[in-house]
Amino acid sequence: MMNAGVMEELLHWLRTGGVRLAIIVTGSLLLVRLLKLGSDRVVLAVTEEGVDQVGEREKRALTLAGIVRTVGTTVIVIIAAMMGLQELGLDIRPVIAGAGVVGLAVGFGAQSLIKDVIAGFFIILEGQFAVGDVIKAGEISGTVERLNLRVTILRDFSSGAVYFIPNSELKVVSNLTKEWSRVALDIGVAYDEDIDWVVEVLQRIGQELAKDERMGPLILEPPEVLGIESFAESQVIIKALIKTLPQRQWEVAREFRRRIKTAFEKEGIEMPYPTQVHLTRIESLPVEEQDMGSPI
Image (cartoon, rainbow, N blue to C red):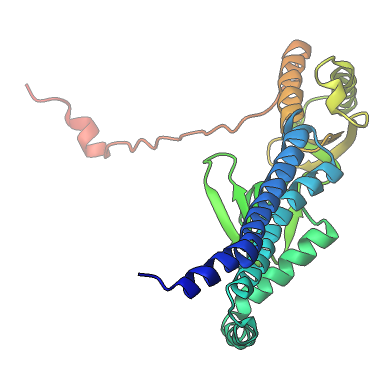
């Protein structure tokens, strides 16, 4: 049976250290829960109108919400574990010293991880891109679904594939949706067409597009028709630009192309398409065979 003295010490610890340990555990769980609720509230507030509608500040808040939750949870767990060990009567100084030695050893062997964290810190600090942005890194492009201090997660548009890219590998990044986006269309017409008339038709299409009830709010500046961009093999290329809201350039471009095709067909403006001419070589028979005629 348990000694009376041991029982008394146990009861005393439960009334003192046990209560403090329970408070530590409960408090840490409560803080983690509050962090999750706070970050979820930020995400909900940002995505209520759709990620495509948010501005730069909202995107940054969305990114920071995820990072704060991850880092905050880690810090709370570590501090709670240290305080819990201390309440259990364990000397945490050797643990801290050992953690420092282990951290130093791990640091030498995890230089790439440190590079990722430093690169991720500057990406977030400088606001290079955020959750919801569309970026291109090398041959990979997609929507930023998640961003933390170590890795950036992209979702490809066409295939839906998910790319996990360490932040230190992001050498040159093109942000296609920072503050605003742009439609850049190259429209080809036949050499026989009156270019001034074609430009006038394109300008009219752009003006009608900007006044459209659905497309107009997506366009930030009146569409521009810059004129002849280049001379191709079978067509003259005319450049047109439209400044749009972030991530809405593809939608505007599709509608612009549709209206261009409809208007060109109505105005009789030819849009060349590749053609191929096949030549068949027919060899004539020798004169001797031609004179022989058919056998009877």
